[in-house]
Length: 138
Image 1 (cartoon, rainbow, N blue to C red):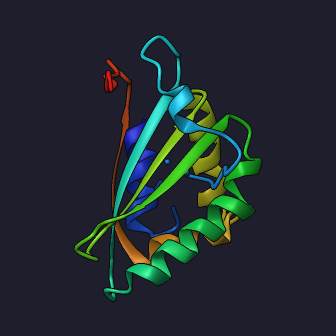
Image 2: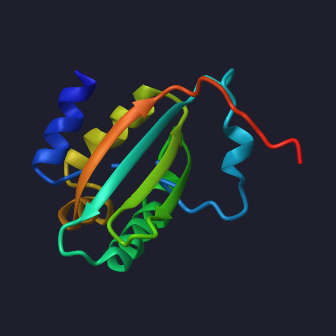
């Protein structure tokens, strides 16, 4: 059912993804813990018009205006590919139920800043569970 909701959302361009918000004073890396019961969403967005910077700006706006206020949302990070072809959103949610509640809000038209992201890009997103973390010894 969850995948059907997400697929429907992408198809109607009303929805992706995971800072899904800009939390400049919080460190996402501190929450990357395989024992933590969190849901990670990784969304690769391909700008439809090739304007990577405009997509980044809209995603950051959506994260700041909407997602940071959503129940269950932990953090989101925006990554810009060096080839200018993609934007990646790495977002963390407390659980799948919280994410599904946001998707329902998005589908009902109550998250217009995030909906705009999906009109500007083709999303490819999937939920993940953290399996392991490896850090440098240097």
